[in-house]
Length: 234
Image (cartoon, rainbow, N blue to C red; front, side, top):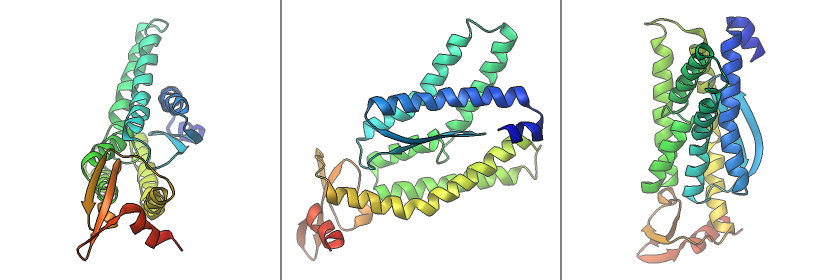
C-alpha cells in the first residue's frame, strides 16, 4: 500500500481505502469467528481484501451466505457511524470511496465478494465443479475485457493496478481449483454429512453441495460413500 501511495501520490485515497477494506474484512472475520470457522489470514489488496479460512468446503451454504454478506453490511454500518464524527466534506469523500469500493467488490468476478455470491447462487442449482468452471470463465472474460479497454479509453493507474492484481489472484485460484475439487470429494468421503436432499447422478462432476448422491453405474445404484470409497479407499 505504501509503495502504491508513493507511485500514485494518492495518499489520502489509499489510506481511506485501506480503512474501508479493513472494516469490510473485519465483518467477514467476526461472522466467521462466531460460526466457529478458523481464520488463516486476512490479506489487504488495493482492490479489496481476502479472508482465508480453514473450513470445510461442504459447510452449509447459509453459513457462507452470512459470512459473505456481513462484509458489505459492516462497511455500510461503519460509514453510517462516521457521518456523525466527520465534517460534511470529509464524509462526502468517504461515502464516495465506500460506494466505489462496494460497487467494485460486488462485481461478478472471483474472488471478489460479487463473484463468490454468484458462485453460491450457482451452487444452489448446479454442481460444485460446473459452478466453479462457470465463475472462473466469466471472471477471466470480464477482467481481461476490462484490462483491454484501457487501451481504447481513458487510463486510470489505480484501477488498472487493481484489475491487474485481481487477474493474478484469479489465475492463482484457477490453478488451485484441482486441489479444491479433490478436497471437496475427500471431505465427502471422510465425513458423514447429513443432507436433506438426495439425487441420482452418473459422474463425480455432477456432485452438488448440500445434497447426498446415488451413482448409477451399468444399471446399478451405488451409494455416495461406496463410490468414493472405490476412489479413495486405498
